[in-house]
Image (cartoon, rainbow, N blue to C red; front, side, top):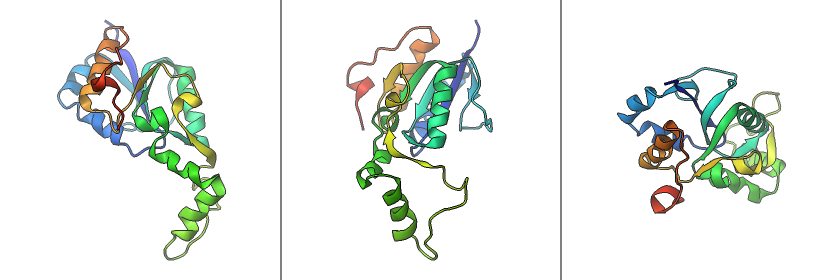
Length: 182
């Protein structure tokens, strides 16, 4: 049996979903017999998202131009995209900055008002990726195939989502165990 090309992506979020993924503990060995991890922030230094990915778990909201570019590439190059965790599903905590009303107030608050020794706005290109006016959940930017909420989703939910995918089936995302937020 050919292995599934598997990826995980981290956008604007805390990495808690990836930490929960690592909580799969011994089952990660079983997973490794079925997948080739072709892209991930966990243990990979790949800079370019590859072509022909079968399944990708995307953590985090879309908050800046780098996130926007990456998620569009991920969607083009992935057969099945899973919105992984509350930040990807709803934009959650990263979207709290939306209440400030745009990028300028966000940058002023972060770098000037809360600055310590030498408050200043980052003005050299490449230091801070240009922010989007609003943080958006993944499905508002690209089509999503499966929604896996949770902050973070527990390892049991991640496993229950992935196991059917390994068999070529779509997981049933119903009931408290599979769709509870928070």
